[in-house]
Image 1 (spheres, helix red, strand yellow):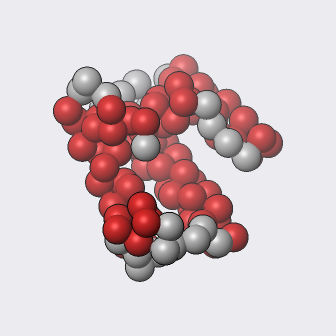
Image 2 (tube, one colour):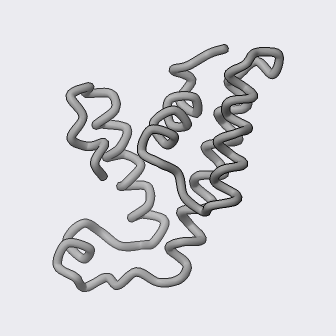
Amino acid sequence: MMMTTSDHDGEALNAIRMANAELKAHKVNWEEVLSGKHKPSNNDDEMADEMVMEMFKRAFANTNPQKGFYQFLLNIEAWYKEKGFLTSAQFTVLRRAAAGQRRA
């Protein structure tokens, strides 16, 4: 959600749209989340993992496998699979690559 505070309108809008997609996938709305009516479940982690893996899929599709950036994405993916999370910087790189904003 911190990306919604970005000075770059495209990043902020993308973060809001991703959050809205997550809410829709869970069949809840902002009012339910912010009021505490919706309690996260174990499925939330599963949904987040599916979203990240889909982002990796799109990022790899947008990246030339012959370039160093592709290997960089592979390293980020390996980190995610090992540790179960991404740093803010890693997520930003992944999000941009998935959106086609970084071509290599």
